[in-house]
Length: 153
Image (cartoon, rainbow, N blue to C red; front, side, top):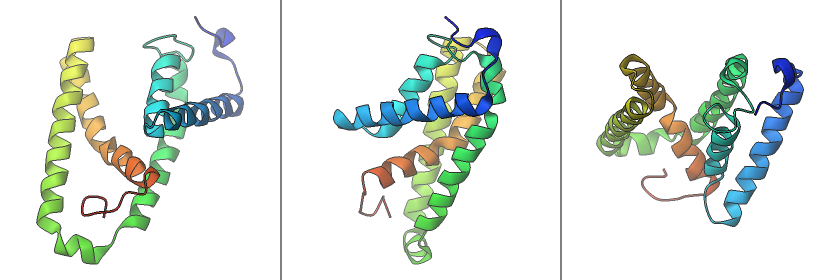
């Protein structure tokens, strides 16, 4: 089911619809006590090639700038939250958390990629992308819940 005839819909309208839908799904997740990030991911699954194919892969590639923009905002948010005194005092713990998070993310995403696609190079690439974007999700959930404590710092 492809709702975009011939793949032609002005890019800004498409981005606006995706953003509006993302806000809606994020708020629905809040109502059931889940992070908004879960709603965004659910929306991506529903409208992407994996389910309804409302946004086929060919169109998704044209929207890479949206992903880059969003990751840029997350990176800026991470920069705002950094506290070098805390980083210095908890350096070993932080390094351990980063190594474990990266390793587990790479293994899980690569394994799921292998199960779904059976394509080893693609799965390894997905694992690497997962590692690169994993902190973004963690920071988003921490900020959304106003988490405090050693891990959140």
